[in-house]
Amino acid sequence: MASSSPLSDDSTLEGVVLNATGRIPSIERLRLEAAGVTADHHGVHVNEHLQTSNPNIYAAGDVAKSPNPALTPFAGQEGRLAALNMLHGNTRSLPERPAPTIVYATPPIAKVGLTVEEAEGIDFDVKETDMSHFLTYSRINDTTAYSKVLLSAEGHVIGAHLIGHHAPELINLFSYIIQNKLSHQHVKHLEVAYPTAASDLTYLI
Image 1 (cartoon, rainbow, N blue to C red):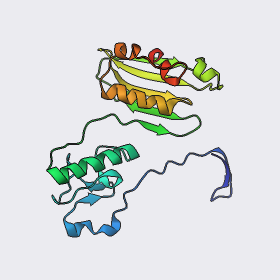
Image 2: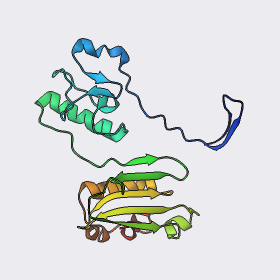
Image 3: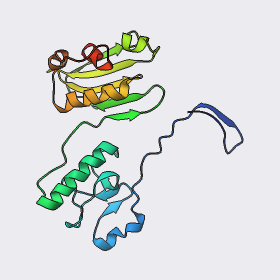
Image 4: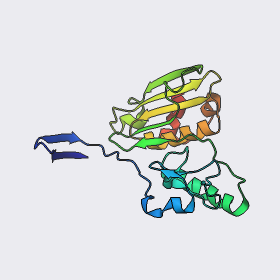
């Protein structure tokens, strides 16, 4: 949000301020060591079944030090998985799923999958698209809409990076595409309503 705030040296910061403090597990008062549960400042240590170092105790969500980011959808997913493992034995493991992340700035920024740097060593192409002239964005005067999509040599989306008004919703579609290993040919044959942000998807890959 726009702000004008005095700093400790009496100078003033004006413009746009982004609060990105993150989440810290609140475990200091739990006396986990007394229960034989290993933890550090990143959270409670868990295995692929969300089981802690005490086999009778499980941890999920923001408190667990799992491969998942501390985001609400993953906390719910982990909670269900931990409950099933507690009730039925360790029959479920943490799935490897893409983690869409969004910065709710103005304009929003979103990503899922690999960055160009992370994809080093993989045979891939990058398709960048200025979406600001698309009807979806020009009608709302969004001049920042832009996409960068990484496509493997086999034609699968391995990463997507978006900026613009519809980025938060579009990134969910890209997450689904990556998770289900859909090729660009599959996506180009999707039938979606027009005009919507989803109808622009076929032009981005």
